[in-house]
Image (cartoon, rainbow, N blue to C red; front, side, top):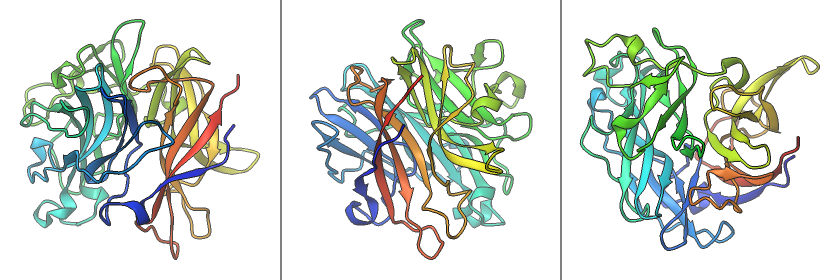
Length: 362
């Protein structure tokens, strides 16, 4: 059940710069001073801070800028902080959604189309000051998960993207994340699961390969002699969750892991696909229940002129969570997302960051 929406932040009015528009779900943690730090991820990653979720402000300080490296094999081009995790509130690990955007470099993209030359990977960054600033080690030592193949112009979109929250599984001591994986070559599309006991080490993350967490998704540029099957993750519960990966928590009401993200589902009685934010539950992060609708909303890919403004980038945050990383949730929580305000049936940079109280039922 979803409650009334509240606008938390209006990008068109409150952004520090015109292109400061959030392009990933927000993440939150409590720093060593007891302050809430919520990451927002335009090209120059920034933060919203405050003593609680009702009193957040935007200090307009860049925490991680994009390196804009022109070499795709260094995986350091356009960078968005996608997930954060900290034990002490001072030392913070971040998973970074990295895009090599070939369309910005005519010599690397004959078509000059964004998605055709979109090459994605997930990297790692660190902060030692409570998330005020992040940096990563020199490439490729920062690489967590890379595509199976080197960059090829006009073959995209390709790669691994949109990692979820990093969540501690208290039963085995591992930290887990889910990632959306695009189909290309031998790699099947869907949601892949990665885990690590030492999440601050990029080389410690291993992906589920179908029978065990035994796949290191290394760079195709340095693994030319390694079979792709040794680096390929196996998507989980494809029918139930498709490629959902936006928000992951352990839910104390269901006593299950809770996955929330954008998806669609064919509804026979309505004779069309219903788009919106859905949730699914799991005991082991590998086997997920059939997704259920939280809130119906158009998505940018499903939008048609005359539809309601579409939304994306769902994130569930329970302000009552006792976890420093807010990686647990209860029966009641808040659903954060970005609404795209279209004008003349076209997407603009006018977006709203919104919050909706939600309540689950069994």
